[in-house]
Image (cartoon, rainbow, N blue to C red; front, top):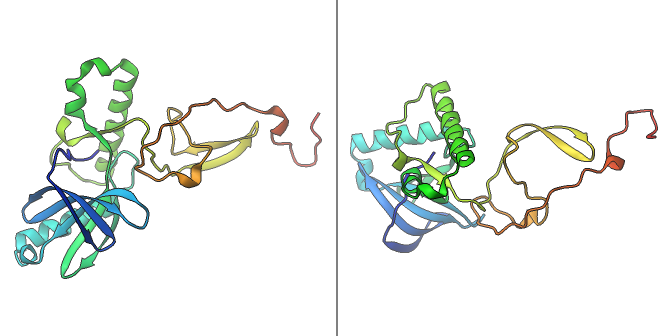
Length: 219
């Protein structure tokens, strides 16, 4: 789940370890920018509390509350925090940026939605809301304009719980559902948030590489 980034006037400048690309708006003194994290060359959303806004108790409280909430979120379907800090007298925190369109924009193009895709999006929204509920958090706006649907071909990091080898392939016990496409070649060049044009292949299961039980020979 993420916010509607919408169109924004272009702006380019450096802030801490980030290059700001565009302004995304301002709310109660908190300014938001689309930026690039220079160290990893990935897109992020930079939230900045200007020095003048920090003097206002309501703005400072909002900043603290949002930063603390994002720091608790750990779910593949919820935008997560990357870091927080202070730069030239201004406090900031950085969260993931999801490339894609809002659900409202997607629903406007109903012909692009088949039943399997609609079910996947509904499942992911439900999982995100369940995560918030488990943390006793209430999202202030659950609406199509506040939900971002990721574009196909966008690289995303998945935290999995690995299992044993089976027929030469590693079992993933948790973290993926089986609907995903996994990068197997050129992994060192892939970065989260990066758009790629993948060549899809089905991995062949090699029985010859299947695990042999300890102390036993393979027939």
